[in-house]
Length: 300
Image (cartoon, rainbow, N blue to C red; front, top):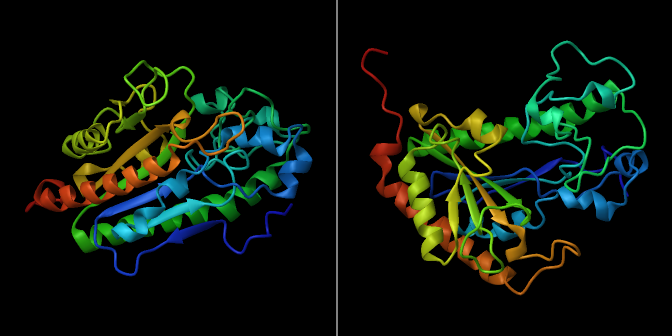
């Protein structure tokens, strides 16, 4: 067990020696370092808390550095602080004292129990056995949230400065239950959902190519249903400025037993397929340079 201050950094940047592509990867929900203050405040076991993890997603995309792609991955879990939310989406019912006026207490995510500090895990069970304090929330946000997004922003800006544009891939997994139907590897629900906020966060040619590549590898892919993109996609995706943000959700049942969280036999193949996906999308992005680059207007 550990405390919030136990890790020297709340995230890790896996940086290739020489980034060779405009792609940047973010894995905000794969952290599995459960601090003692979460365990002691929770009514759930660590196993139950792990139901909210995007389990092993950072490992599945670890070939990124060999493809010349930087990746930032969270080390603390989503159940402790959700990095794919606004910084202050907080439920006042979870706190023993008043929240500051700038807190967003009325967002749809807060209403469903999945704010910046979640009230429930993925199976709808309440996380906390006691009320939290604003000081606890503020400490998590200052220590974990702000440095993560400051670093992600630097990675995005660095890619855009070097290549003229950036393609940010926000990497997630999704539970198999409740997904739309599709021809899949294991079962009858889709393998991958690509979210580009219905075309607002990413140039359509990038989304189309991502879908084509994954389809050619044998995966059933749909767009924006039921996941159109979260805070990261919305906050960073500005195609008009040369930043394209695409969320990828992978059906967990392909690679992990959703109860035991043990790896399935398909884990290695999926990992290798994602390497091919990154390499092919990188090559395509280079070929589509003119269409993806921010074109400064002469009147500016």
